[in-house]
Image 1 (cartoon, helix red, strand yellow):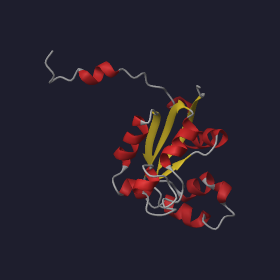
Image 2: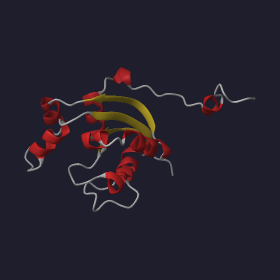
Image 3: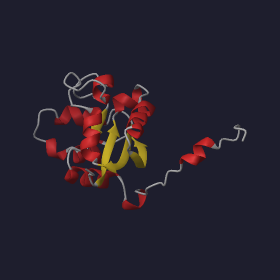
Length: 158
């Protein structure tokens, strides 16, 4: 049964960037069938972090979360595939790495509930809002993959 093609947001958080996990996380995402539609690296401002996580403003973790998210650079990625939102949530695992399934990104790399390496949109509505928060529509262009190019490296004799 085919699911609709969706776009979702992945944030590789400051802890993962500091630990050199960008490539590993992106590799897992691509191997799982996601296409990277757009990507950028930035250090969130306090205002951006507070606006992005506004839905959590009344929760006790809001201030520490915002402080953590501005502590270093993040990598923001718009991803696409069939059933992208649920598939990415499954790939990253539960928020608490102790509860995350074996082989998920958070199980394998996160150190605690806050420093859990990644953020993934949790619903279609959140995905639309979160992608729009960081990316202009003109930045969201699907790349047509052609595997032939990979095998035509200059040093390969034909």
